[in-house]
Amino acid sequence: MAENKASITHQLQSVKRKSGKSYSQIAKETGLTNVYVAQLLRRQAQLKAETAPKLRAALPDLPEDLIAEMMTPPLRSYDPQLIQDPTIYRLNEAVMHFGESIKEIINEEYGDGISRSTWFQG
Image (cartoon, rainbow, N blue to C red):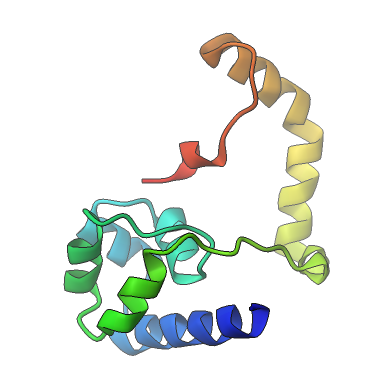
């Protein structure tokens, strides 16, 4: 299954590269956030039916079979070696440093509960 995900992700990234567009450009064209577009094209998020036509317009070379695949629930994953990348390491460090304060603000704003990563989606 992981090999299939890697193959699909490679195909999605190839379509993006071929388009010459940045995540921010695609986000502007689709009305999504750049992070959510990146998550979609890395198969870490599920493409919603109402968003598919917008993504298709922004990336016209995106084949129908990949769009259909993107609309299925993804196998979200994490590569433990990713933490070795300096940018990822620093982001992790920032979460560890600011985590308690962020949690308190979430509790204040949204009540006692667990924050959802879907808050970061478009």
